Length: 337
Image (cartoon, rainbow, N blue to C red; front, side, top):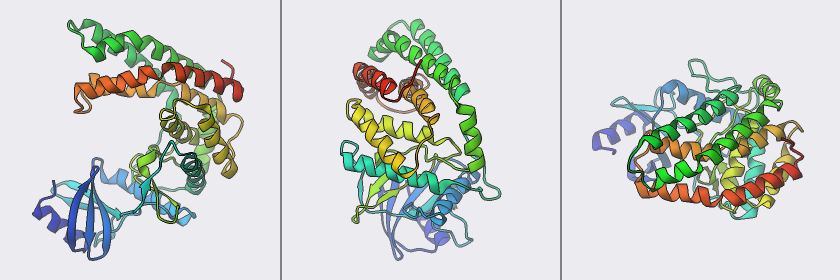
């Protein structure tokens, strides 16, 4: 909640006058004497914020200007501190969110992702920023998460009165655990380590949350990419697979959308042969099942039980279409197991 005192502090530190302030999907829409702005309270520290700030500025310098750049405070820093809370002020980008069922939006978003990856190369984070990286981490992350599925199975078995979510977890966990093991085996037989090395040498980064509400299409039909909170050093196959999954789950795992994404991306920044194997490992890994279960068992979100039930049922309902997609992908992109 933004109190009068906070509002005054934000005005003072950013040297603006707030005329209107309205909550909007986890951020605040501001109308100010300088134009419209987006105010956001961030839940991580200044060193990480400086990495994110530097990443956006790097993209702009390298020919990818359509991002939500930060405004500086009166000391030339991209934040305000109010009662130990950190706020950022960025451009408010008018437009509509990408529609992942619309093939034109999907193709344009894939091209834009390729352009962003090209522009990300050569990024040297600012001094006193914290380097955010997942390079070389995926084999251990996958192993750890598969073990966590087993641990959550034990937790569920011990519960006397199991609810709908827990019953569904018990019935389906083996299916997802097997997928996790397959993903680990594919990743182990891939050129993952070499690709991490190339990424480290290229000094590139990924968005890490490239989804419809962070892809804003403005009145000129240009794509703007916003919310780089999760950006980090990472191989591009992660961003591509994550984007693919976010699209595919909305279109019943229709392989044509996967082909469209890869064709559109490849026109701008072709994937190497060996990147397809890592991409396949990411597509196999049951990240969504692990994340949902983790949130449920470790109370990471204050969603209602019904919300968890609905999300779990949706995941289970996708299984057949998903497995068919995996088999088609294996054939079309020549992936052996």
